[in-house]
Length: 94
Image (cartoon, rainbow, N blue to C red; front, side, top):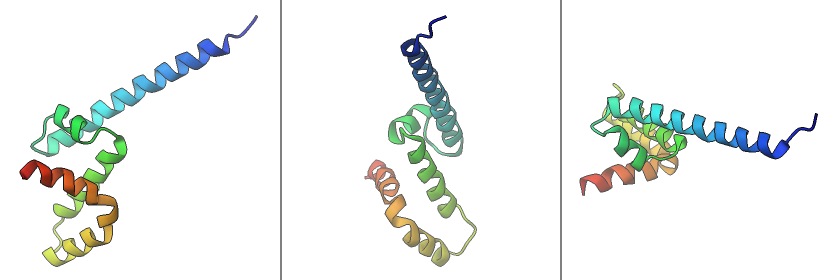
């Protein structure tokens, strides 16, 4: 029996795309339930899972029960990684 590796590769790629899409939809739904954004807006603003992860980290800092000074210190410590997310959100307010 001959194995069609090209077909197998295409099936695996299709399955990976489908899994990515379903994961992205679930992430967007989770974030939209915690914010004022719709699922579609979340997917548009934060299209990659890494973007959603950064948004979650930023929300964790902002919503923390720590003092303002402590939250500012945490934000400062993470600004290189979270700065793009902050800018996206502030651009919506401008």
